[in-house]
Length: 162
Image (cartoon, rainbow, N blue to C red; front, side, top):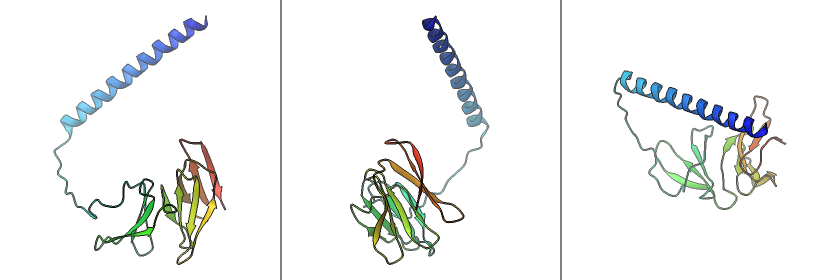
């Protein structure tokens, strides 16, 4: 009986997958024929160099861009007016998957492979807010200033970070 259920479930999954694929194909074909041609203007803000992969991005109160790189193990600060870029936090502490500014102006970031959440108050030293969280990935502040972080791939959890 168990084998019959497994075969029936496999058949149902294949049938449903085929239906979804056919529906998506039809929608794509209809949208391609119905959509007018559009043009786009591409503008390079900063030429590719030194970032070694951008994984997180945020803005400070002066509209400067902060770019985090896991592979490059650094956070770069970019002036959007001039395109000038500088290493803000270098390897290894600078490894940043996601980064956000907190209500007090502190920059907080996750170091995915290190399993660490770092923070730096304006002009202050870098400190570890949490450790031992391999796969720590996204973070966000709520309206009250509470910090939350998610763990993926190497774990599966949602944390509130003090």
